[in-house]
Image 1 (spheres, rainbow over the protein chains, first blue to last red):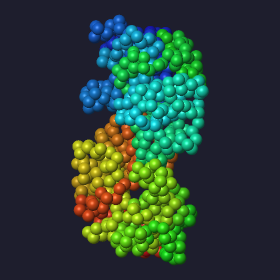
Image 2: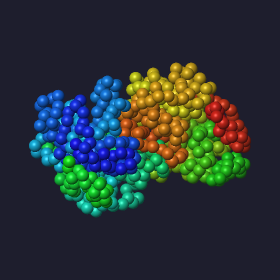
Image 3: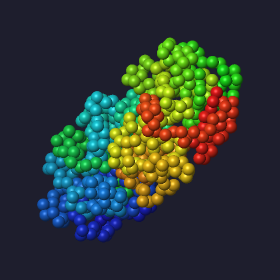
Length: 316
Length: 316
């Protein structure tokens, strides 16, 4: 099959990459999305080697479950061992032996075919387009905040960052809370959020210090973390939604002095994400930037890295 | 009055330091304790200049409240402005304009006299000795964990560190939870904890990885934080009890990948600490190391820094 794989140093397009094995459901990939995590993996994050890509929609070609064959599906990206304590408690996402699609010991979606356990697959309603379906994985990650925190509708909430994931987080939080402010740098991205009733700011000043009950860090940068700690109230809550690549100059002192609760947040359940797209309460069409053929992955990645660009797709 | 003050570079004994002003209750200090925070301040933490010391017991000499005069007291160390939102909600400990005894814009307890607002003072029952009373401030900080977290009696809990604060934390947690393991380096300190029914380990091996529901970081070191993140279960909780002085090599990635909740924890309420000493459920006598006259502060500090030494007192 055709696939774009990462050999630990660079990405390579291979028209004759081996097909996935027969043990799991086989999915023909219709469309895949480039995510910030893919860009981080190319910089060495997770020390992953193999086919990248974890945001996708496709059609099931082979499966033990005959009801899935021919169906349009998305897939949860964590596959647990199903025998450890975490898996037994339904927490496959935290299985110590897990594999993760395109991220950890499991080939991903930048290919003609991928395989996943049958239980990871979700059939997509007809009302959700292929382009929209690719957003289900990051949208589930945004909904994960609601699973972890008892959101109060009257909270003052800040989201730091205005990129792909931050856009989804702002929209999801707006379903449950009125008062949301996004701190970003890109005028066009912030304008979209304004149209959803979200306040936006391009810089932080002293009037914003320590006034937010909840702050979501969605930049993955040290400066984003530092801004986050300025915004949150004493005894407030911070959601860490992006892995922070640098280990230098991270100051945890305000966490202790101001008794802040920091909550790490990763993948989420797919069901609320699928339902929200099917019902139309979450908008993603404005985030579609462009579709590149898989063999032009290099051009696609360069484009996805540009400031202001939202979602870039690869089509096998 | 006699006082030992820090001029930003070194501590100085002054036999003629000005007495505290007349606006607050005046307390003659009977005994004061040296705390890890004092040692950090001498290394530049908080950029504090003035009289150090925030753990004390004393006798009220002057007060608007005549019932306090002549009484033996301890004092909560944070004094709020009483007009801001935090203070109005009873959170003076998080008042942005607060002063903190011997730590922030308020002279401390390494002196013959100190002053505090009347509402900060707590009369000590006769059954609590002066030496025991000095432990009330750090013991309140240990009880603060109970205020912040809904402790489950069947949780597997680890405490990283075996110093002064870690000893109190282990004992407090043992009041509510059965299964507590302390990871430390000092055989004598660990033996004391064993006598309270706490498991102890002198090193971490793979069998301890990701098995604890709650881990309390009580070392304030990068290596302590790194150990803490190894011990805690996915989706578990970490209490950050000591300010981590270094900003280098702090890795928050496991927080996000394993969806850990980090809770910063500082000062606590005095009442449960006083009650626990009065009723005898918490033991502190074994932690008393030595008492130095105030003018010998330099010798006392050198002694307090030594590995294996627990509580060192100064007597004005």
